[in-house]
Length: 118
Image (cartoon, rainbow, N blue to C red; front, side, top):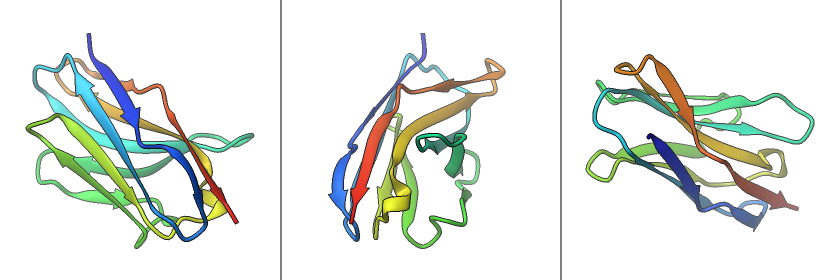
């Protein structure tokens, strides 16, 4: 059973930083991508950042480019999102996601709340 556990959310003043973590358990092999998504109240879920295991390439939502950094520790099966220069517009529930090509499906964490106040 694949499980994802996010942590690191909280409340921070605009301009501050937070680091989100997502620990994956129950994995054997076959991770294709790991990504962060967010959903603000009343809005659709959107992708924030993605990292491809093969090659390590990354992509970011234009709204977070230059401020957020996605990374992973393969030994710990842990995904990170370093968020700097946070803005109130970044307030949302953040979810991690992994896609396993061996299973042909993706998995979601339970989400962690990030609140940025001005």
